[in-house]
Image (cartoon, rainbow, N blue to C red; front, side, top):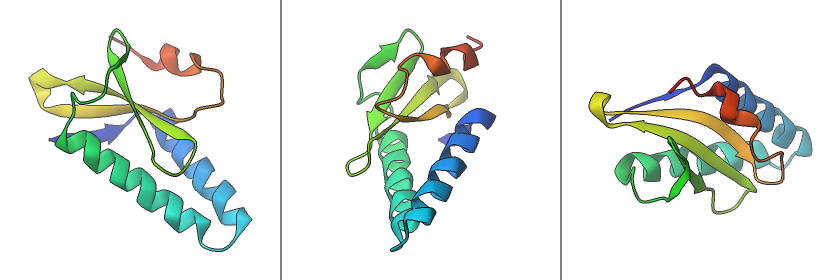
Length: 100
C-alpha cells in the first residue's frame, strides 16, 4: 500500500520535528520514530481506526499528543495523510484540505 502526505501535513510534521529538536535530548528523533511507527500501524491495518469524518480516520500516537488523520483510497490502494495534528489544536482546521 502506498502512503503519501498532503503538502500541509508534511509541513506540520517538519514543524513538529523542529519544535522537538529545540527541546533537546533527541526528542525530535523519538518523535520521528513515533510518527513512523504510527504510519506503519495505519498501513498494516488501515480500517482499524474509527471514522473521524465522512472520508477520514484518525490514529493517535502512543507517546506524543498527536494524531494522524488520513484518507484511505481503497480503489488506489493508497493512504493519504491529511494532517499530523496536535490533539489540543482546533479540531476541524484540516477539513479544508479534503477534495473528496
